[in-house]
Length: 144
Image 1 (cartoon, rainbow, N blue to C red):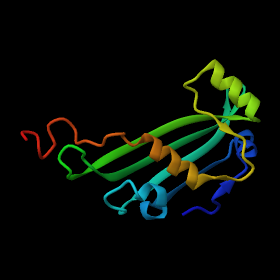
Image 2 (image 1 turned 180 degrees about the horizontal axis):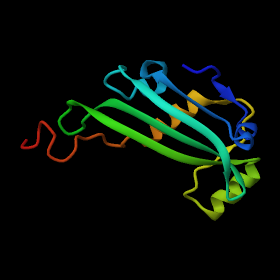
Image 3 (image 1 turned 45 degrees about the vertical axis):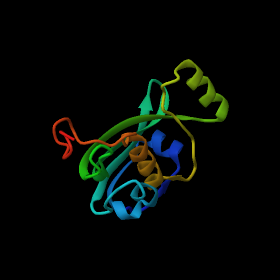
């Protein structure tokens, strides 16, 4: 688990700090609701830094989760490897300007008590397929 579960995101980025850890899937309640099993662990690392003059958080997440195939309804293992660079906006106006300039930019507002596990869980939830399916040819109902 983590020695600390919250960070001051701006200080963390400017100081170039980093943390890493593992958390059981069962501890991520919102995620567990989307899975067929809560067994397993999520490995993650979060590093602060600068990118193009902006403070950023670099997040890496590795996990294997069990989803239900929406074609055959059998469970299957879905591997996740998430790498995100999340710029930190100082306020809503700055965030709105960045999003106007680049609608695909993923950015966060500065948070003096950013919940690291909630950030990890959010990124996993955003990475799950909208319609979970086995890989081509792996589905149990391929001929049905």
